[in-house]
Amino acid sequence: MSGRGGGRDKPPVPIREHMAIDVCPGPIRPIRRISDYFPRRSPGEGPAQDWGGPCRPPAPLDTAPGAAEQGYDPEADSYDSDDTTALGTLEFDLFYDPDSCTLTCTVLRAKGLKPMDFNGLADPYVKLHLLPGACKANKLKTRTQRNTLNPVWDEGLIYTGITREDMARKTLRVSVCDEDKLTHNEFIGETRVPLRRLKPAQKKHFNICLEPQIPLASPSAMSAALRGISCYLRELEQAEQWELEERGRILLALTYSSERRGLLVGILRCAHLAAMDVNGYSDPYVKTYLKPDMEKKSKHKTSVKKKTLNPEYNEEFFYEIDQSELAQKSLEITVWDYDIGKSNDFIGGTTLGAGSKGERLRHWLGCLQAPDQRWERWHPLTNELPESSAFAP
Image (cartoon, rainbow, N blue to C red; front, top):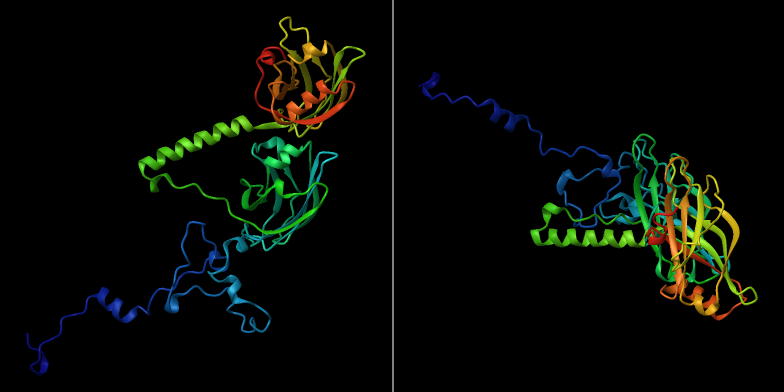
């Protein structure tokens, strides 16, 4: 069709093409997020994305024209910052006293913690676990500091009954968490210290960068063979953790009296027992057996201590037996939580005898080989219930 002047009219431009050509101002800029100010990447993630051109994330303080002159370092908030630095640092001291068998962790302070709340702050606290065998019985925690990323605790947490054997094989896990009253508490970062790094009676200072938890591989990203291996290893790990679970510690004193011709067993105290009641405590008492005991006449029981996880007994029991016969026996110790109107709850137990290992064996042999001497040792309580105590609380 001819227009005015003899030319052909141009076809109308579609509205979508018109908007794309005439209206779009350029590439879409990313929306500012809190992660732009606190860059973090998971351990398996590659290097930071190259945004290129004008679409790079804005610097957190780029609105302050004099920030460079005031000492602000833009590299500290860039995507190249270390992940552990973004989680913060923790400063603490560790001291092991072999005479009292105590491990003291003095939590001093943290700096530059990762913000966890909407106000850009956190409510941090520190908790400790002994590995392997982490459970509520050996968990210690500090008080919570409110609305701060640089908390100061200066608080001592003490583990009682830590033997040299524990120092050689255990690891202390130090975690920093954010307390949230409305939902569950959130993990910030952690570090792990093998206790063999400590020298007896010497304080060691630590100032470390917190590390993230190692995430498990996603099942969807693994082949069928890898998924099978992963499930097998996870079940194996759970089984090992079940065997190694600790329910507290007990301080025992053994003496073989050559004059009285018998074994004197002292139940001195317990520490860090597992809480069995809803109030967060237990009502513990201790039972002792000298096995084998066909007639079941060797049972002794201590008194019940109410609402405590660290009871003190200082009670003694005597077993009349020849030293030669005692070498064929084993001493079974169990700790129970007393309940009214229902069956008592098993807390933990241990066995000393010729078939024991480690510190338990050395304690038993020392008593047999050096009569009339008092041998005091701490022993961990495990979740394994001996057969002779299963039905006789």
